[in-house]
Image (cartoon, rainbow, N blue to C red; front, side, top):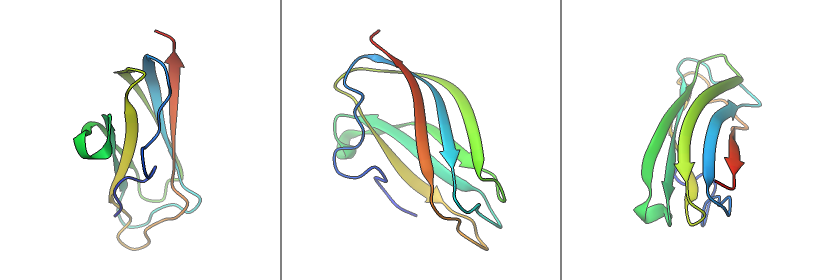
Length: 103
């Protein structure tokens, strides 16, 4: 379990837009239970709030979620890992945000 996976100031896209997909990828799949993350949005980590919770099933290495999350150029995104596999945590977690900018 880890907070602020992107670190520091999070990830900023730099213009207004919309996130249309969230993809979770793992080099080694979790075993025993799902890996769960919270995607957070805000100007800083301390004032961010959860805008989505996403889960990767046990024994899975990829999952893609369709979503519609509007954001402003001043928004930053942060990721908290809230659960990992119970038998084997999994490793090499990646979080990919698919988006359109310039709205």
